[in-house]
Image 1 (tube, rainbow, N blue to C red):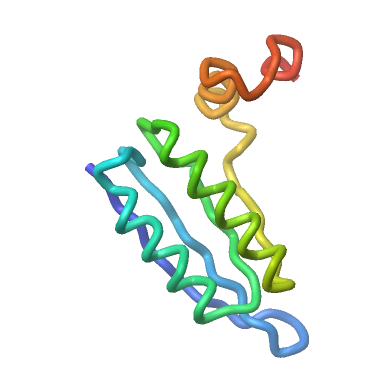
Image 2: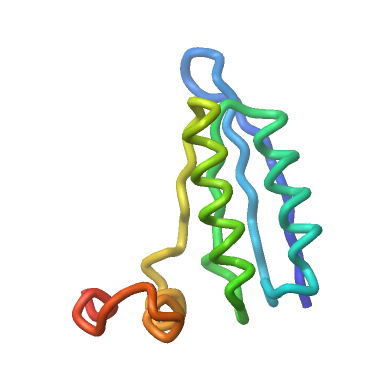
Length: 107
């Protein structure tokens, strides 16, 4: 199962922020839809928050899309926040993928 939704909310100062909620299997077979939802969020708002707290399975495609969203936001002067990165599965995933050392994965 994979689900990805976009909700846009108004924030202080008239700025709009999009919430991209990712649930289930965030793997390569769902990469196109996730990329489209991220683009939709950036297109409708001044900033984006991506929640991965309810992801049950992921591969390196998810990390690539997170990195791309961060870079796109920085280039556009927009904000990007990742919600759920403190989840145990995500920390272990980063460690297994070689992106953090054993010490950083345990923090």
